[in-house]
Length: 295
Image (cartoon, rainbow, N blue to C red; front, side, top):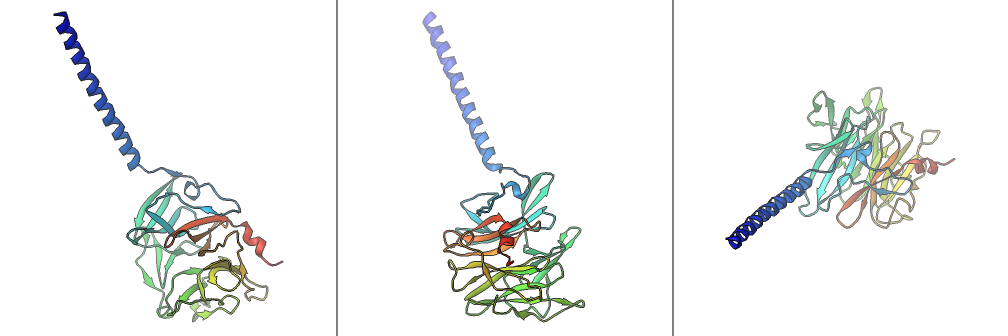
């Protein structure tokens, strides 16, 4: 009888031990599943990223091996960040926006993205634009017949409404053009001079809101790699100065381009090709730009 009691008790303990282990395993699986489905919260300025110094670093709020981001733009109030996401395996892309609510960033897909005017009221993509509305952005509109025949990749605007954009040629070369607002009317786009339009590839311009400089990328003699970034400063007589290479701290042997200065003027964002065909967004303190300005 005693032996039977201990055998019964031992079986009872073993059964409860097994049940406890199963419940513990389920709990662990549940916790792991929840942690995988819940992304890390993005809090603070610049999507929670630690700002860089004068050495470029990767801007990766959601690091992933499945995709890379390309061509990001902040709104002037620094409350929204629009970026294109490209997936490695499929080659497909999508538009994503991060919005700051309180001190936290929330991510969602959107139908459109592009450069944003200094007043935050217009978004440009190729030869179309959208206007800010109470509910977000309007439907795309054409920039008009003056721009319909240009193969535009990037168009940026100054506070005065001057457009600066690239034109992709049929042979892969490109040049930059500008179009000003004169007495409220849009002028016919004109090409920049040789100080800017020189080289095999000239594309992805950014004009400073006050029109004090233009940034672009190009393949030209004396560069560091396939595509380097350059800057031209506005001269006292209104002309554009000679192209200045950003130097080997920014440019590499590969492709570097798509330069853009954040609306607060603090950082240069740009794209660097890592392993083809993938790009990564880099950022660096924009103080170095002023150091390049001819005295």
